[in-house]
Amino acid sequence: MIKVSNIAKKKVVELMTDDGYNPIEDYVRVGVKSGGCSGLSYDLKFDKNHEEEDKIFEDNGVKIIIDKKSFLYLIGTTLEYSGGLNGTGFVFNNPNANRTCGCGESFSL
Image (cartoon, rainbow, N blue to C red):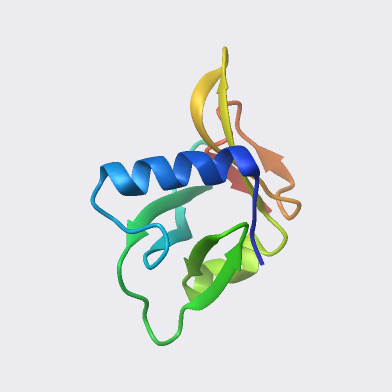
């Protein structure tokens, strides 16, 4: 399961609406792919559809889909949003990550 902070929810709703998605019906697709300075990187995008093998969750009014492969890497993760001096964007607080890069966009186990 992925948790969504209140600040991240507000930003998700804003961005989905701006991009022509319906935050009530459509999904935030979260995944993991190879790459980044720590070996694995996070992938976040909006999607109107889900695949048969996707895991579907809802937290704080945000519908989230995760592909089967990425699910194991993301269990217990909290999606947050930061607008501070170190940069603006979504932040993944992943308890499974042993090491993360300085920008927070990649990790290793």
